[in-house]
Length: 532
Image (cartoon, rainbow, N blue to C red; front, side, top):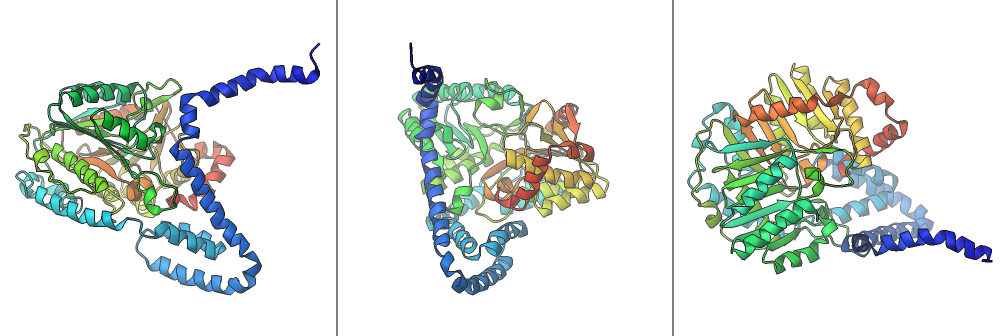
């Protein structure tokens, strides 16, 4: 008869086998031993040592108390007189007030040279190249035949270096699965070059299908450049995957690689979604190159709602320019853009103005937010918004509420399903403030809504990668398209209304019924909302 320990081991054996099988899974192995986990562990060690140092200083508290108090006072004076959003300053107040030396040291560590000197120099060179690009034929003010939007067109040209275009066409796709085959078809027709820039690239049927086309096109001599964010695309081991793509004849670059050092610039992610083919067409919107965005992920138990637009005509120039600017920036080069911009573009006899534009954390101009604020300020009848996140600053919050007080109907569609728990809980506290002020907010009942759109008065629409949160509005590389009196605006509004019909309105009663723990978590983390 087997002994008692042997029986226990026999019972445990199936579980141990499952654990071993899980640990031997290639995906799990690559995650456990991968660069991202290693860097995360090293960062935790740094923070632990940093905190341990201040604990070690505790016996000397009586000597340090006075100096810490003086240091915190001087620092707070400096903080409130420095440029930047007040919400960021308030978020840093808490650690500085309660743990003066630790809080100040952490702030300094996070803000020492948040952009390396060579990148600043490179940005200056790129501005000169882009100024030259604006002087090329087709970039004159004559592209703005609609005087009522001359102000925003001039703003985007001067601040974002993004001209306005007429005679360009825009096609709208209400979900990722309808856009994907069109994107594949466009890639298959490439003859000269393909530019791909996405926050997330992940192995699966979507990316594998695209990669197969890229490999074939590279063999045909088509120039292919691929950029992806090193954090967003962490699942593919960004640095080693870069080498793999290069071995296939594809130029590739992981943007802002993760390093085991606490630094502010690591928060400046490349959140853009851009695909340019031969300078003839460009795709952008909310989707990344991963299976959930086309509802092909097997473990996805709800519907993923996203949107895409395809731009054709001269307006594609701006997408090529945005891509090449960042490509030169991260490769520390300053190549001429002319061969990718001086192309014979098809002209469309279509009314309306199209302005593709980008934003980044380093220009300190808040272009992404200012365009949204412009739409809100100009609206007369309605503003309809879709966004996955609602972590708002005071300026955006006030603009939304002010629009309602002026008699403008403001409706926002947000997801019911959660992808980031803390972000979701925090966002719901902002939703309560909005609904209490008359803004109507709806939960997308079928699943997760990831699209980022503003539509107003049947005339104006903005579609792109820009969320309504601090990260998108201030910290990341983003892109979008401003459209005015284009026929496609009616299609975008129709899709909004059809999507809204599937939603449930979030009223005060609905918010009160949400679990108390979610409301508590949201209120607590709202204190540091700008840092989420």
